[in-house]
Structures are given as C-alpha cells and as structure tokens.
Length: 624
Image (cartoon, rainbow, N blue to C red; front, side, top):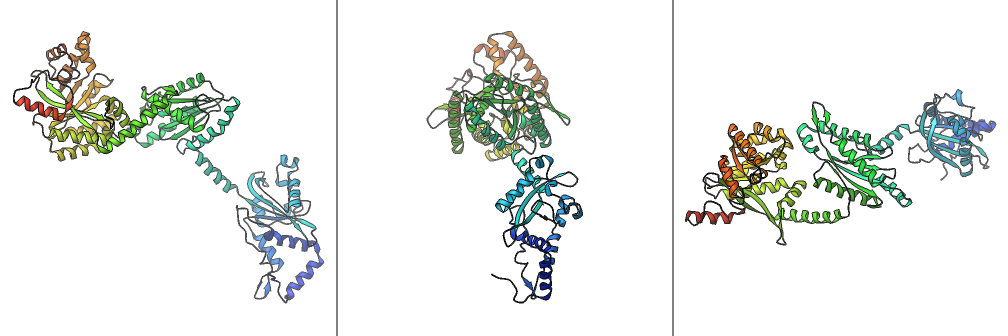
C-alpha cells in the first residue's frame, strides 16, 4: 500500500531539495531510515517499527527526516549507529553513548574495530563481520564487546548492509544491545538448575548429565566408578537439633567429600541425605574400593556444629564401569543395590556391586509388595508368649509378638519383614495395629494379666504416639496399668531427648516402661538412671551363658542388684533349661520368659489353656 501523500507540504519539499543538494547527508538519513525496516528482533529485544511512520501523515503532515533522526538518536536501550563501507563510524545515538562510554565527538570518524579485543582485531574479526553483512545482507551474533574504560559487556549485535536505489553499498547500520544483566540472570538460572542450593554441589539431574556424557568413552577403554552414599544417622540429628544444624551438617558432608575425592572427580547431592561421587581417571576396582573406604572414614568422624558434636556415619555402594554396566541408569541402579547391601550388612561400610544383588533386590521387591498388601488388609496376627512369676511360675502376663503368614501360606520371619517395614516407613501404621489388637485381646483377659507390646524406633520419634496410646486405651477400655511398652536401647538412642519426653508422658498415664535386651548396648546404665523405667529385661545372651560360664551369672546378679537399687522389676528372657530356671530363681529374678515356660501362641490357645487351668486340667508350670 502506498502511504505517499498526494500533496507534499512546503516544508517537505524544502527538505527534499536540501537532501538533493547534499547526497552524503541524504544517504546518512536514508540509512538511518533503514534501521527499523531492516532490523528484525532476534528474540532478545524489541524495537518500534518506524518504517511506516516515516511516511505516515499526522493532520496531513509527514514525519520529517529530521524528526525521524531525532527519534533514533533518542533511543537509549540500543546503541544505533552508522558505519561507512569501510567500518568508520558516521553517527552515534544516546544508546551507543550509554552502552559504550564514548561521546559522539570521540568516536565518529573512527573505525568500529576498536570495540573488539586486540586478539579479535588480529584475526580480522571486525572486517569479516562486515564482509558477512555485505555478502548476506545481515550479520548477527551474541558476544563480548569492549567499553571505553576497557570493561567488557555481553551484547547482541546486528549489522545490516544498506544499499541505495541502484543497489550500491551506502554503508552499514549497527545495532548493539547490552545483555550483560540478562546473561548473568540466565547463567544464574542455569547454575541453579544444575546445582543443589544448600551445598552448592551438582544435583541429581546434573550428575546424571555428566555420567551420560562420560559413558561413551567406555568403548574406548575408559573406566569410571559411581559411589552412592547414604548417611546412616542423619535423621536423628536433624530431629534432635533442628533443621539449621541439619543443614550445616549436610554442608560439612559436602565439603568433606570434595576434599577426599581425586582431582577431576565430581560430587553431587542427590537429595535428602544421599550423595554420589563420580570417580574419573580410569580407576580400577581397587582404586574405587580405596576411595569408598576413605569416604566411610571421613564421614564417620565427629562434626562440630554450633554447640553440638554429632556423628552421622555413612554407607557406600559402588558400581564400576564397564564391569558393572555401560549405561548411566544401570550404573546408578547397581550402585544403589550395593548401597542397600552395605546398609543390610551393618552400615558404616561400603559394598561393591555383585550380580547376585539383583536377585536379592527382586526378592526384596516382592516382599515389599506383599507387605504393603498385608498391611492394607491387616493380614497379620499376634501370638502371645507368657511371662511367669519366678517363684510361683504363675502367668502374670504376655508379650505380644507379631506374626505374618503370606498368601502362599509361608511364614515370614519377623527378622525379615520388620526391618523392611521400618525402612519403608510402615512401622507407625503397623505398630498402631499391633497396639490396638493387643489391647483389645488383653481387655478380655483376667484383670491381673499385663500385656507387653514392643515399640519401634519410628514410633518413639513420633510426638503423636502418646495420643495413639491414649486413644487405644480409651477405645479398648484397658487400664493403663495393664499395658507395658518395651523399648530397645537402639530405639531410644535415635533421639534420646524426644524418647525421654514421650516415655515420661506415657509413664504419667500409668503405662509400664520396660527396657528390652538390657546389657547389650553401650549406654544401658545411663538409661536406667535417666529414663522413666519400670522394668529391665535381661538379654537372652546372658541367660544362655548360665550353662557355660560363671561370668554370665555374675552379670545377671549385677543387673538384678542394680534394679533393686532403682526399684525396678526384672524379667529374664530366653529361659530354655531347668538349670537356667533354678539359677535365676536363686538370683531373685522377678519374672521369667522363654520356651521352657511357654512358646508364643495365638490368643485363642491361651484362652483355652486358662479354661483348662480353672478346671485343674493344665499344669501351671513348665508350660509346653
């Protein structure tokens, strides 16, 4: 569409006459007029398109070339200036002065090559850029440019070749925009996308990206190792001291890992308390084992943070490429399997991946599915093992023991499924079911019988556990004095302060508190003094030793004397022989428990047994 006015105004005719008299000046104005017509946004910015405005009329008056030039020179977001065919600067707008630091009288008449570094000038980069614009009509790039003071800025540069009506080269328009701030933001966002905000280490996605990049080198004989690291006792530290201390511990862990790995290797935080090391330098399996050993050692050292000293420790699983896989996902999975084996074998150690771990993982996965299904359907049952008075051998209570028979009819050992339930975080729900079922069964027993229920470490870290116990007692109408909760030293040590608070609240309700497996840990004596206990259960390892050595008898005597001093009852576990029974009676142990006195049986069995007792048809001692 033609926007040329039918009748040019006198001022327009005079202006055109002046331009005809001075071709150079007219060429300069024509070139400036091409700026917005020629320049097309590249995605970094936008400009007002003035192509049509140059000829549009307002109240029948066109925008003069002089006004148009003033508009271009007033632009501050862009450096817009003209170059002659040799690259000499012909004009200079305000945006150019702000971006590059030169006033017009300092730069007009000089080569635009001074905006490039000396190395670029030696390589004739300015001339090559102009030649590209001359041959193709436009040159564009993002790169570093120099200001007058020598500082660099990141710029988007567009150079357009300008021709007259006869296709003769008039010169070039050059438009530059300072994108330094935008580039810094983009780099910062890119860094955040690939790094952990807390530790500054690579995150999982960046770690996998680097692993993917290195895997192709394996076909040329390269080797690498993936070390999958999990902190053994971070959660108790985080729960006991708070997230601020936990965060500092994680940062310290990251620093220690960076200090211990070989030069060129990388560390990443995969999430939570999981880290990983990608070991380069074609390590052998021996090299990988040595590094994992150093990792375990350095992470087992105490960490001083604020006013606390904590020890978290770590387990490590190692997969070596190409022996254990040639793909990133496979290597990470196999190192994870090795990590699981390290945790199963006692923690605070490392394990090298072995193909047999796949079968173990499959078996574990099947058990996990079965366990979740069983929990959903409450497909468990409780058996009760009697606890008897040591002097009279009369039953005074029962310990509730969890049993599981899967859908195939196979009995699954508690030693297998309870650790898995704890690992999967299922123990609070499963423990609540055990507590509810045991209290319901006990509510129908004779009023002098007590039921003992084991409490997991997870339940002992849950502040809502007290309310669970209260609600259960209320729902089953079981008096609190007939419930005894058994805790282990390990469960208490996960968070001693919180455990003490929870146990104290439970004791205030009237619930009995028993410390199980006494004598097997390092802090048993301290716990007797600090925890609100009512009973100590002597570990079966001491009871079994009665038949073999006098030392066990001496330990048992010491424990009973300690409990008498603190006013605590005692129960000996694992009584299996008449000799053990006689010795424990001689040592004045209060209660006894073991196969000699009765195996764990369903509640229905004991109901029937008690009925037989009432009729005088069942023995009260040495139950089978």
